[in-house]
Length: 230
Image (cartoon, rainbow, N blue to C red; front, side, top):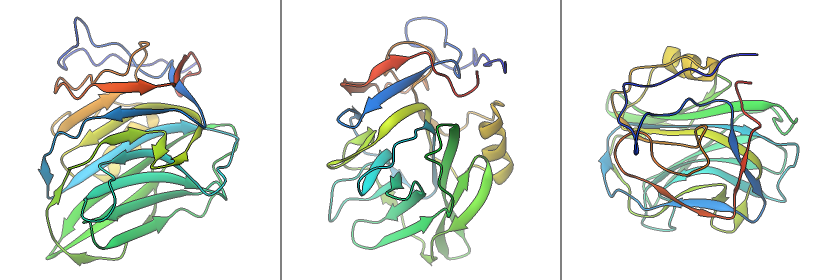
């Protein structure tokens, strides 16, 4: 059994920060966790989450969306399509850029997904990683600032719900490197610089363990001892 590691130097919620990797939240296709948007602006950012499912959604199932709210709202998002593929979305409110992985990950095993929004020259691009490996990138477009305005969500994109387990959800206000993505996927700690939210650890709660107070509101998801690093 792989051991979850302790992250004790990060700010805690009411005590020591718990380990992660030995538990998750179970979503039944009608559940989600909502997080009030911090309202910050980002030139670069990363979202990361672990998932496990054997159920493909009817059309889409939201995994982790930071700020989706329709036209005029910026967001980064990870979702699953009806083929079991992971999709990454990067939107400035008016122009949606999409990147897909080609593999079906609705196989009943744990996987990780990351979308890294980064500056390259005068442009911005979104890199999608599955299980720590680079998958593909969105088209480039002129660099701009993304501003979080709407609720962040685990397990839902509008009315498109995910069925399965989610764990270890993170938001960084920086573009983490490819090697850092690989380390996260392997369960190895990385530099916590820019960590603005960290949810779905081993405790039965939806609190933010980054120390920034971006706590979630649970709408139906249940605690599970099925962990991604067990």
